[in-house]
Length: 156
Length: 156
Length: 156
Length: 156
Image 1 (cartoon, chains in turn brown, orange, purple, red):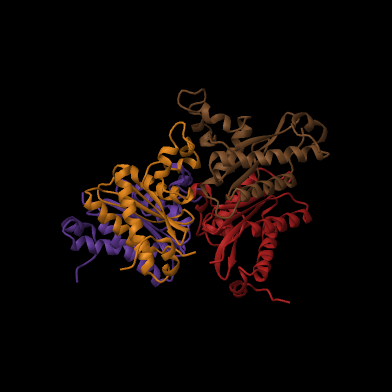
Image 2 (cartoon, one colour):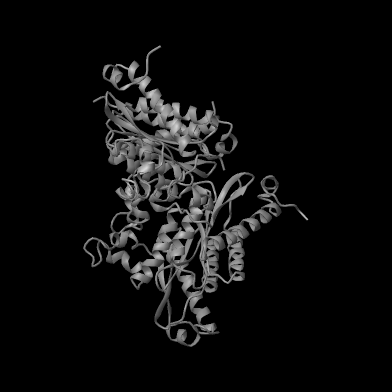
């Protein structure tokens, strides 16, 4: 399995920060590895401090649940198939959008979590990071061949 | 950024206690600084002890989420954009009204949380404290000029 | 049993704050009732934020263990009769000096906790508060007669 | 009080990572603001995951206790004045060296925590970061004049 490096994580954080600035937001952005363990975290100026925990746990949820946290929004509603899931795991499962696993050739190699704006905005920033990761994976030797399979992007 | 002092916090607590008495209520009132750390807390005679935690966490939530906790009441309903937010941050996010950030010239310098009555009553007391803070800020040298911008109040 | 009021608690906090200033310290001071539940808390300017939790839990420990926390310092040493007590109760038992129960006629009516200086300094401030409480109890109607028994102080 | 920015935090993390590499170590490095809230965190390749929590809490301890965590090593020994302090604050107080507050003109503006090697090694990396911060503070407009007072460094 390809391994997410700190160098890659830093570049992804920069992508998220730039996207966030473009949207005139201040975000907390977290990246965890495939074990769900924190690799890197940045809090932008004036980003709300509740988002520290939320972004880290969105990233963790995306890896630990093997799905975008967005998928849990409806599933965790009263009557939904995952109602109550957010009170398991000592409250680490976050059912707000903005956490997305990072895939390399179908393997989960890590996850990102964004918190700062509305869930819709957080998702938009998270998706920008995922797209950047997919492009980086294709160009990178370490992620190269296998990542092509998982990626929907075309080289120019 | 202007700094909230213990002297100011004490005066704000007195305002909240007086308002609470006028309404024939017994309140827990908490004040945190802009980092969310507790500065001062008073529990009035016969105020319910569940409110200790609730008021402290309302104050924390108002600072950490950068909004009155009242804003979360509808947002955290099933189907709302923040459904599930109250199970993040180890349960410190309170989605009941009565927590309001204290602003000085647009900067959050702290937050207050009130718990003792209904949410509507808690909000009324919290707002009385905020109004007192705005008046004090205008009169005080340390908050003076910048606070005029953030305040909606007119000098006599 | 005589009941500790918020008014009394506030006056005790002022005593602690003045003593602390005399010693050129910045303290966190907490007062709990006889149920161990927080009644009042003040953090002085620049007092360390670790002391929020420590002072509140010193006060709680003094009531819940029915003794000054100072008594636990030696007892909780390896080989001592209370070794390990500070890891019970979700870590709320504090084995540092500076928490003292408040007695009225032999009954525990509450407790105080001080955190900000060395344990020796915290104890000195806590004792100043206890002394003030004993004097107040003697003069006060509500604590009057019974408190005379528990108090070592003489009216002038 | 001068405010620590994410840009500054990132540059400090790079300094810590370079120092760590020179020493052939893999470190977890955390930076918190003066309220103890996480600003930035990086885990280097193969750094041990226990160090995530340890580094974040070392940084928090340095700010919340207003001293290098190194100072607690002896103080928290059985019989020492701070024995048991590491079981307060829900276990967030770390009594291992490697957490140091960042000062600007005598004010604590944040703190760093390093975990990855021995305490002696962690302290060495942390000190390299502090030195870099002091140099940056002198050169920076935002920290400039006030920082000169707090700094022991001479301009060339």
